[in-house]
Length: 352
Image (tube, rainbow, N blue to C red):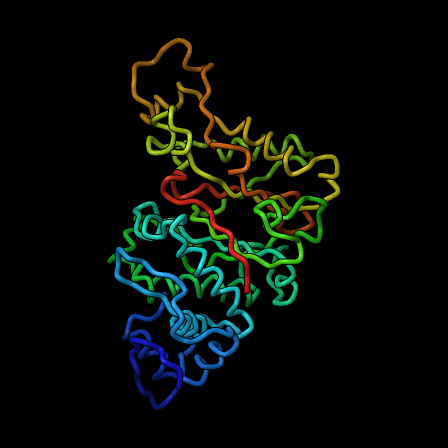
């Protein structure tokens, strides 16, 4: 038997009893889980190709070490197939990277969730959905990989609601939040290639984000981009708070954003990703008047406030733009970050 490190071993007489025991032990996200039998967990560990006790990452602030065995047990409970283990492990490694600063988004009252964006050949191999019902139900890989990340957060990283998870509202992405980019259906450079990998490599990008805001617009590029910019610039998101734009001299305090664009890629044949990101960067802004009215900025109103604009995104490359979603309509979405880049920055890791 592999060395699992610290474990809790329980016995049961039936599957139903096992499910109820998992509830009693606090191992669930509120939904029933697959009982993590020793045999099933071992199968997942073997599929990972790594030792059970290998440390994937740690959270020093909580004195937690996350091992391959712990990842495997939670992947089993989430309903994953063993083949999903490399993706779940990669997402776990990425969110435990110090640059991501997991303690921030996982314990904040802001209620963000960890969005996993999968790129590369593994999307087709595992049938990870990048098209219709992108953030919705119906696909095992998306549902269970995203759920595994959440269970790892709760069971291995102590991000337990009411304990370290202090979310005031939260959102459904805290159950599962995993998508793929439809990088084979567009001429745009895939996200992972933009972030330094090759097209034939598979990666996972993790992003601490709010819930998706669906955007509808007339089916032409510029109206779509104007609508996206407006949705991304709304007051009340983490993109336009005193913590992100209150000190206009510190650009890095502003946050990143994920933008998904769906529909027929031919609509965008005359636009590169860089052009789209530059357009959004230029138009994601609010006037000083609006920010003062919302008490984001301090000071008395001045006559020039309506004409003075504050950008809400540090740089064009802080827009994580992906082509994903159904083909039938030119729907889009924006996902504001949990907070400024000094709080958490998206991380991309290679699937091994």
